[in-house]
Every structure is written in structure tokens, then in C-alpha cells.
Length: 107
Image (cartoon, rainbow, N blue to C red; front, side, top):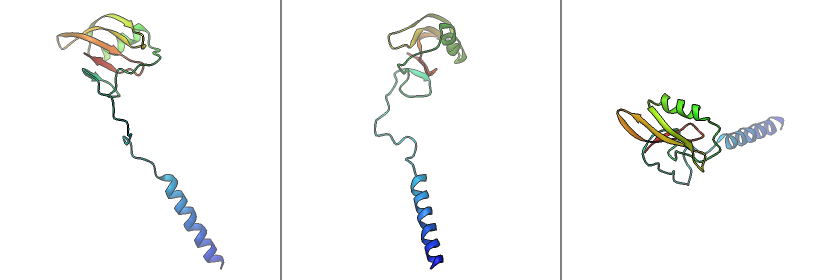
């Protein structure tokens, strides 16, 4: 009788553990991702992402330079706290942005 009880308890614990261990696979959101226009050096397809930006102008400039941009000019934070300006990469000047996540986007 003790062995049956222990067996039933063991199976119950294993079944409950397996149920808790399961989770949805990454990227199974029912919301389609936003598509960014332009070229991105970003962590998310929805870049640039609006949000409270704690970067200083100097840090935003450094982030752009880290991604290969030069001649960074006109950096200013917009109403969505995204740093926007102009910069050159591969001989082409374009509008660039840096969001609070550090995503770099070129238009």
C-alpha cells in the first residue's frame, strides 16, 4: 500500500513539474512586428522605439560612431525622445536616429 501511494505521489509531482516547465516558444506573439523603414543596426524590427531616452547627445553620437557613422551633425531629441540627426556612412549622408534601447536607424 505504501509503495502504491509513493508511486502515485511521484507520478503526480513529475506531471505537475512537466506542466510548469512548459512555456511558449520565443517569437510566438500574436501581434505582428512593426516594420522599420530604412536600414537598421538595431535589436528590434520596430526601431526606432519611442521611450524615455537617458542617452546624452555625446552618448548618442558615440553609438552612431560605433556603428560606422562619421560627420554626425544636428543631433536633437524629438518629442518621442529619439535622437535624430544627419551622418555619413560608406560615403552617403543620411538621416539617422538612436532610440533609448541604443538602436541605430538610417533613412
